[in-house]
Image (cartoon, rainbow, N blue to C red):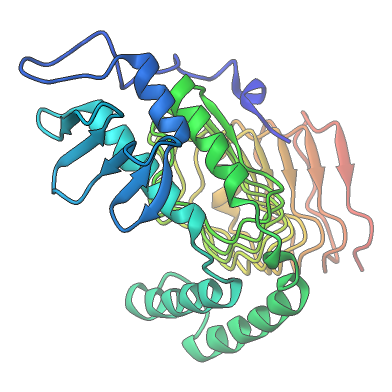
Length: 354
C-alpha cells in the first residue's frame, strides 16, 4: 500500500489546521473545546434535523433553524452557534450531523450501482469522455453490473457504518491527517469528509463511487479493491499518490498534475488519458483492456522510473521515456519490442507475448 512515505521527498509542507480554536471572530460564541468534542463524540441521529448528545432527554441538538446549531443543555439553557463569519464550530456540527444521518441509512448496492451507471451514460453522451460508442458502453455496463451484483451483493449486507462514523468523528476532533475506513463493507461514503485530510484509505469495501469533491489538502488516496466504475471528475490539486487498482473503472478522469504514483491496474480501462501528469515516477496499468498507448504520452514522462503495462491487449510496444528503470510488458500481443531501450533500464520482462 502506497502511503505518505512514498512521497515524503516531494511532499509540500503539511497545511495548517483550518480550524483554530484560539481565534474567535468578534461577536461570535464558541463552545469550550472539551465540551464541543464531548458533544460531537456522543452526537446521534434521532430524526430529521434533531440529534441527541447524551442520555438525558434534554440533551438535544436542533438544526431546524437555517444557519443555526441549537444545543440544549441539561439545565434547560440553549447554546446557539451561528454560521456567520464563518463559525468553524458550526461547520463541524453540520458535518457530523450529515455523517450521523448517513450512518442510519442503508443505500443498497443495487440502487447505488444503477444511479452511477446512469450518470456514466449521461456523461459519455454529453461530454464524449470516452472513445467507446454509447451502445457499446451501455452493453459493457450491463455486463459489469451483473458481475458486480453476483459477486458483491451478499457482502454489501454486512456494513459497519457505526464504526466508520466513530472513526470520522475522531479524525475531525483530533485533527488527524489520516483516515482509514477500509474493510468495513461500506456501500457509500458521506459527500463531505474531514477537510484537513492528507491521507484517505477506503480499500476493501463495496463502494461504487467516491464523494464528488475530495478534501483539497489530500496527498494520498487509496480506494483499492472496491467496485468503483468512475473516479471523481475533479481531483484534489495536491494529490500525489492514487491507488485505485482492483475496481471496475472504465476510464480515468483528468488527473491531478501533481501526481507521482498511479496504480490503476486490474480495472476495465480501454485507454489511458492522452496526457499524464509530468511528474509521474511510477505508472501501473496492468490487467486492463488497453489496446494502444501513444508514443508521445510516455516520451513526455521524463521522470518515469517504473512502468507496468502487462496483461493488456497492446499490439505494439510504445517508445519508452529516457530514465525508465523497471519495465513490465508481458502478456500482451507484442510481436516485436523496440530497440534500443533506455540505458537506465535495469528490470525488463516481456514474457507471454507472441
